[in-house]
Image (cartoon, rainbow, N blue to C red; front, side, top):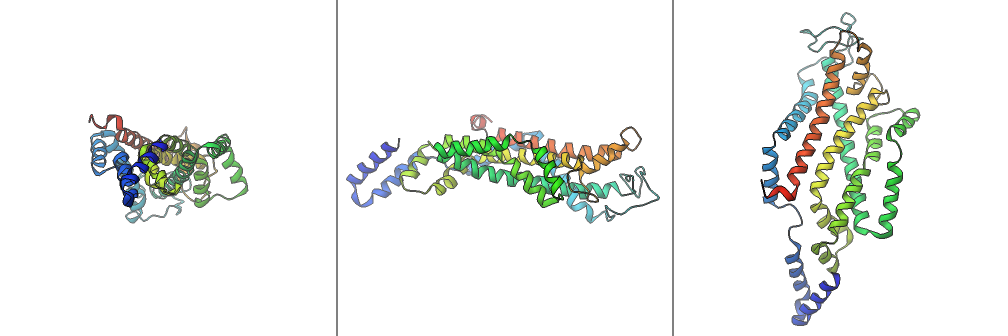
Length: 320
């Protein structure tokens, strides 16, 4: 294929010596096709998302939860760490709409702050892991050969390490905090995106517009940024939603096991762990409220990822 481009270039150069580069550029543009989602493609994607009821519900739930966690404290002024000795494990009431825990702390206030921490760690760690995986996988797939083989063996080696065991070892050595959890989760969640984007890069690097870019002397970095990544944007966006859901669930796991941000900081997983003490007793609000919050946000991100995957599917876009 590369030889054909060189022959075309020589033929154009013989016919018009003064503008051979312009002729090659015209040939490349003719063969390239769209290298990024056009406005019409974006409209199709948005239209298909708007028709997906589950996607609309998922987005609505995510927005409600985000609004509850970030704007709720503006209207509910009780401190999540303030204790009320006269209201230990109190049922929902006017003063405490979602009840109190075993030391008299307001559950509503703790749900807001705990959700904020869980969302911040999960979203930032998920996006950071996706960025690392996209950069790693695109370079590996585009370069290929021995470099690709070596980079993928590193991925295979790291992915074989149980994440939970690694986090347990780290928590035994270092006191967990938000920044540490974000970094650790991101450094253990980039492996799947790396594999997916590598597969995309292996497929896309043989397209005509990528070959034309190479013949024209474009640097590898420019080719990856201008051609490989824009055409893999569907895979990147869909995987990012799944990575966020997985990161939120992982931080809930860690907090439930006591390996997350230590008390008195509130997290949904930590609240659920504390509520399990009353599993066979009456205070249902200590278990169901943080548990339902975790399930809702994780399932919503997963449904959103499924909807985005269907919307970006080129094979079915023309039929809907």
